[in-house]
Image (cartoon, rainbow, N blue to C red):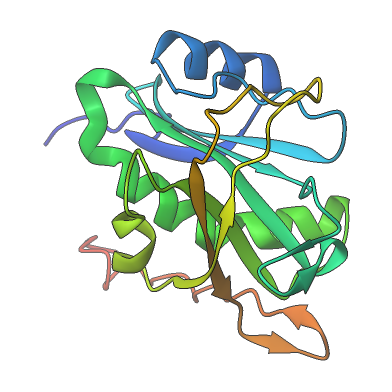
Length: 189
């Protein structure tokens, strides 16, 4: 029988913002690091202790997004995987969708929905559609200019995607599964 490691093979957890930004820059995310001067949380997927994917939660730039007020949502501001592990991008998105709303609510405010933008020139947003998100708007890209944004080409469009959360009394429900018994895990307890 193989000896078990004290550390998980795969983990998804909060990471420091500098590590996330460094990965986004090094991995070639077209927007680079997330330099927004307001609410933010960075998440990392590690495989054997090595960062393989990043997701960044942030407060929306605009007062409304996809029909929701700023304090009703959290935005997936960045999503990126290491160039040799692009296949984990969908995994990072799904894990972020499952755990980030509760973490955001604990630090900032409870959310009703998740939102994200997709530059329509770069991709159609299929990653969101395949994960159950709904396309809720198509808007012109900003011209950039804030200290947290990058300039865009005139006429570029972006789509707004939203994932409505299962809410109870305005707060997202966090489902925590019951732990498995030793027998269900295959142990000979």
